[in-house]
Length: 264
Length: 283
Image (tube, rainbow over all chains, first blue to last red; front, side):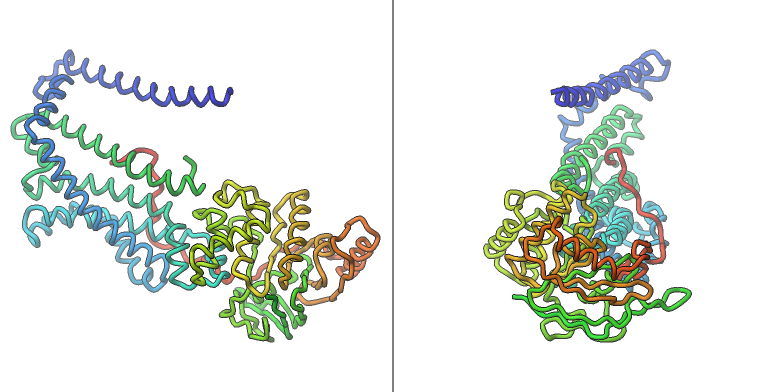
């Protein structure tokens, strides 16, 4: 009874506390925007931003931009996920692959993806192809590193158990190593998606794409449309949060939490 | 199905940084089909090394091991293995699907697999926990699932490496009772590693008393007590006394076993560290 009551209290606190914080931040923003003495064109108040959001929504600009950006993000991230998980898992499993690839991966990992942007423009021209490739390249290294470490962190006793039951290399790979390395792989995918987002917004400006959220932000600069910029930034944040909640947390609840490999 | 195990002049030697270590010296013994053998000894007597060689995880540096007349060279998989570590179960599989693993490996069809798994879960009295994940089970229950898993694909011998050592005393006694029961129903050939004299006398037909440094067989004692055994009976106490006399005065000296694990994954640390899970959201 008391336990249930305290859980209720936790849940209420979990909703109320962030709500209070958000309202407080909004009020502070509003106060500075109205009475802070900044030009409204540079620091628009919330109703103006909301109005810009509605305008973007009604004109269809926002939907088109979001669609274009998500398509690039999806393609680039899918590329990074497939390449990253495959390479990482193989590195974790086979010493020869690790020895061959680790120096290269370690060398490339710290290079910011955006550094390749001018090269990619010269190689692939402008537009979607180099954008997707850049997103793929910059997201894949985190995924590789985490998948590799995930395989290496698989408990030897699981391999031993599987081995003792006569499992061959392929069976052990599919039925033991892949599920056992999931905690790290998921973390890698999460971080990979985050870096995909980060680079994509910048890339959209550099690659002169036709549509996109990044394009919307940088395009607004010429016209001092700070309200559009802020509305778009908020949309990026909201989409990221949605992906985290609806995608990763769901997968996590269904796998790691259910298996007791992670607490909820 | 139960197989005979023959161990003939088996030694195991390995190299550390400083010296060569003889973990097991010239061990010879036989386990008859359906016999329950306990290998008893202090830490450092090489009993786990013997177990690893029987399981095919390590290859003897001298001598030969035969199971069912065939040489154990690492390819022979006609044995079920139960480890001490509770973590041996796969956390991503339910109890039932853990038990099914060995049958999956052998390509047994789904329905048949399921039936067999349920039969063995019933044998260890866990049929009502078939759909539970390991983390939802107690240590004793997890070890029973591990026993069911090792039996489900019907191996000729069952190898157990101190499976109940990490359990509390009361649970351990209950587990021993159940294991004796399971063994009488399945009649497997069992090799059971332990450092607990009472446990050995409770379970075994035959006890192999080991000595340490180097690990070697000191005595082989046959137990003819009727089953189920009564730990408070005179005969039981007498058997314990006999075994203790073979163990000698220094038997309680504990030394960590230094045998390298064939599955050790210690390798040089290289490359960038993995990033840990962020607490916040994305991006």
